[in-house]
Image 1 (cartoon, helix red, strand yellow):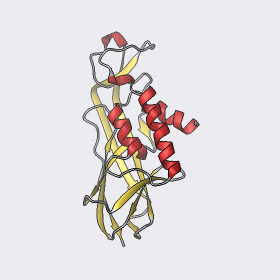
Image 2 (cartoon, helix red, strand yellow):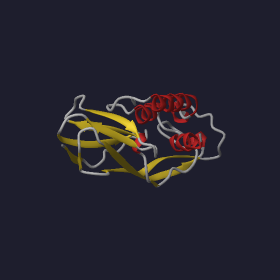
Image 3 (cartoon, one colour):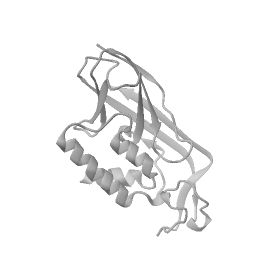
Length: 187
């Protein structure tokens, strides 16, 4: 439960679509095990209940200040994998690190729309693989997604070939960030 609270605290202020894409793995599919499905539904319902603070055009926050993207706002997203060559059926561990800078502190009454955060957003997030949208090409049903025991995103490929992986930040501050691209070989 502590992991779920930590995730929701990091997701505070995230746009519902971003949270859903991170939890549901848009483009990768649902987990096949009952335990993973249960974890995702708990996370999904918790996200719906409590993490959409930035979705409303008028603010009703109990905070003296909020943080919004300023003129120097930037995001970066870097992805990695635990191996560039995997066998069909082997689990590939996906990694994602996000940087964000250029937020400014304002009073809620000065808010004019867009994304915001109650607390100061982290400048560096070491592991956000569950909170990005993954894009794997070529498209098709030759892979499935999962979550490792350590809580990181995984992909398992069912056919050999060359695949390219990219990710898009689910942090809802426009324009978002597109990651580097990695090519892997599945034998």
